[in-house]
Length: 406
Image 1 (cartoon, rainbow, N blue to C red):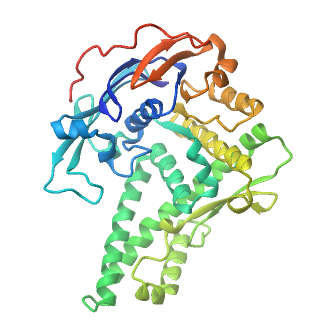
Image 2: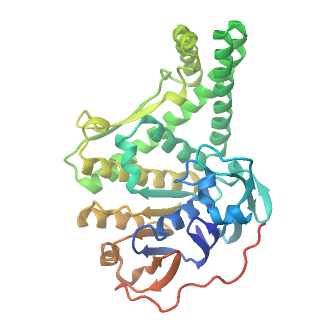
Image 3: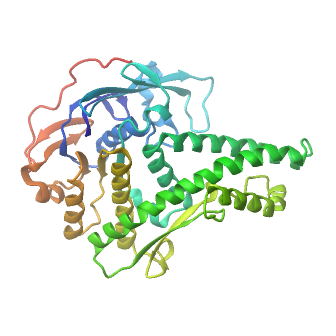
């Protein structure tokens, strides 16, 4: 059992001062667009994953006003977990730089993570409490580029297993070092035999990541099939196929051998274009319905349902791996969904300890939950308690005290 019991934000995008008490069960935040609903879920996700799901650069979460004043941005959460309380604080301290960068920004940020006042790395934070985010942008998991599907697998496995995250970080550094050496070899500033060491490192870490992804896909697939049938009915036959860039062997050792052979086969191509051509950074997986690749042939409705299927399977996988359910986040995920499918999805969501929902249409959610959920109205970065009919309290939630930086 794990849930977020308090969330305090300072200078986090347009939520400049917010102090929320949260409870298990379903909480709904509704209101117009661009008022802070997605930002609130972004902050919750940040406490679990150590990164924003919206920002390309972490400077984006810090307001210009806070940066110019040298004020810290804080995301401060209290987590109840198995009878214990965790205080997680992610802070961003702006640091001024000389001149503007390409985005017109004259500052960088320094991130600081604390768990119960002890400084932690992002890798040490991930897995403390898990989160699964359902978003309108998830349609890209089906129709978008392979990088989004790789990221889906990497976040899933990193939350489930800290060893995977460490292995992935090592692999990414190896690819960077190897790419740099490939460039030096092409320019005549290094010898080709210097690649031997990095090839061995690439094979060892890369084959292990490929094998872990394969094992995860084997577990995800039956869950995906079942959730898809529950949402769409039995008429469509779903298959999920992992497509590694290196041929899988019968075990890890055989996969390593296949990796070495694949590297040898692309050596000429790598000399011409000095980037590592094979490995888990090139992997993908396909979603097939009746033998048709949904990345190419899915209708918008099919793609959205398949994306929901992946997220439901992700939540089930994490519950099994960690022995506790994730915090489930729905960010405007129902806008293009018929009421029958929406109700089936919401019914599945109620199986988890804590569910946070944002929507512009209160009725879409309240017709299902009635008085069984907590409701809040968000406007201009403030939150007002509400009832299921949209009757809003006269007074917004107040900011009780200054959060501590660590």
